[in-house]
Image (cartoon, rainbow, N blue to C red; front, side, top):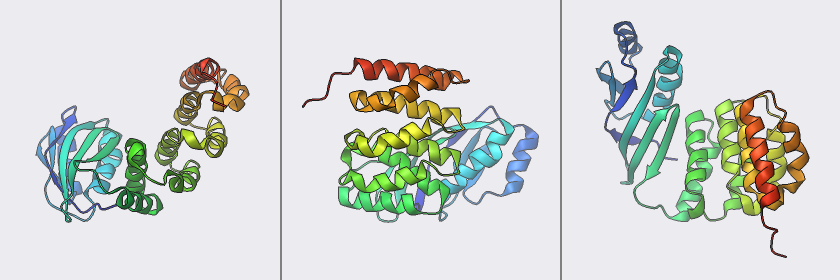
Amino acid sequence: MSVELNLEGVLCIQPELSQEDARDFEAHKFPSWGLINNETIYPKEITQDPLKELGFLMSGFLASRDYSIRGELSWRTENGRTGFVQVATNEIRMFADVEADPADLTVELMSGLQDIDRERRLLAIDMIDQEYQKLTNKAVFIPHLLELSENRDLDIRLAAVTALGRFKEYSRQILPTLMLAMTDPNPWIRAAAAENLGDFGKAAQVALPALQDLTRDRNDGPSFQAQGAIHRILAAPAACS
C-alpha cells in the first residue's frame, strides 16, 4: 500500500494542549507534523510514511497524556491517486476518491497485510472491511486475516476479527476463528467476535453453546453482544436448500 502521501488539512487536539505538553510536542520534533497552536496540528512536509508517524503521535504521545485528535485530511500520492483520511480518537481511516481497479486494489491490500509495519497492516485490514463489496477474489485475504486474528498486537487482532465478519459466504472457514476469538483475553475482541457471529445467522448455530457461555462473561460488553447474537441466530430465516 502506497504511503508516500502529500497530506493537506488540519487536525484538532481535544482538549487544548497545556503549555508544558506543547513544549514537549515541539521537543519531540515529529518530522511530518507541526503545531499551528495548542489545539491544532498540521502535516508540515512530505515524508516517507506520515500516517505511521501520525499513529505513533496519537498512541505514543497524545493518548498517554489524555488527548485525542479529530479531523479530516486530503491526500494525494505520487501516482496521482487522491482521497481523504478521517482521524477520530485512536482510529485512522483512509478512503480513495476514485475507485481503484479491483485487481490493483487486491495487490495493494495484500502488500499491506504482509508488511511488517504495524500501521500499514492496520490500514490494509481497515480497507478490506470498508471496501469489501468492491474486492475480487476475496478468499485470498482469508488466510492472512485468520493469522492476524491471533497477532500479539491488540489493535491488529481486533481489526482482523472485525474484518472477518464481512466474509459471510465463507462461514466454514471463518466461524472457528470467531469462536476462538470469544476466548480472547481482551473483552473488546470477545465482544466483536460475538457480534459478528450473530451476523452469520443460521450458519452460526454451531456457536450457540459458546455464545451461551459468553453471556456469563465478567464484562458487560461481551455478555451483551452474546445475548444479541443468540437472538439473531435463532431468529434468522433458514438458509435456502
